[in-house]
Length: 353
Ligand code: SF4
Image 1 (cartoon, rainbow, N blue to C red):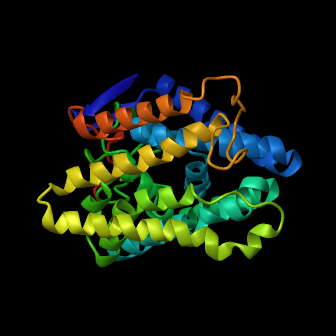
Image 2 (cartoon, protein in one colour; image 1 turned 30 degrees about the horizontal axis):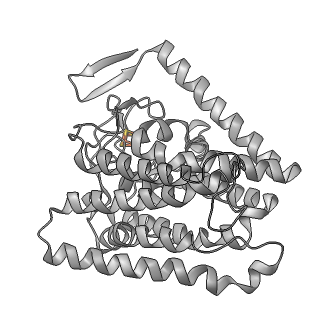
């Protein structure tokens, strides 16, 4: 499947394997476009498929196989498209600009999420418009910056979470996006072992983005799950409320993180994994019961209503399983020395500006 090109450092996909990945990428693009169409033309099905089907799987995928996600993400397709059709200016992303983009991605993430409660969770066309805007931003970054540097390793709001959750992938994937490496970003998040947000703290913006995400995300998620979904235009009257609890939770866990970082003596990468385990466990602690009809707010985020059909203790079992699994995976399992994907052979060896 994969031809080794430079001892263990790089690997190039064979023709057959590349074809297989291209088919998978087109398949995910087709799924993405189908869901996008449903959001406009059959909103209830589209909302269900996107918010309650696809999105709840994403954090688990980022923990286990971030390389798979990086290979098939439809927004990555949009970001790389300008290169493939010769529309990219291929500018080198400076370290300073990268820091600004990564911080922008973290802020975008925190700004967008409350709008799920306010509008998006119950409004297919609004969700569709946000996805189109994100796709347009990814495309624009591709027209400006070299390869994946501007969006996939820069401003994408999911990218900081990939680095936060994905430091212990199950196995490296072949890199099916980069057929050769343009050294577009250093360190390459796809090819660097044990990458975590704070391992890129080159500038003040890198540091700030990493600190806000690692320290703040567990509390932010906790606060987010304690806001209900609003219907129609009522959400517009609760904008402040939708932000207050997530940001208060964020401030609390950020303060705990900063205190521990300064005073506990816990090694920095372990502390990051503790907070990553807390964040992803918190997500599934609330998300799994909600998916089967046992959420804090009945009906919100429900995929299928099993309440009344399964024992009332099932949600507690699911919560315990999530806690054990993510604690084991991120904290106790022996650390695999692996990257998300295997770097392809270098196209050139230009130095970073
Ligand atoms: S493998 Fe090379 S071209 Fe691909 S994202 Fe990493 S640095 Fe950029």
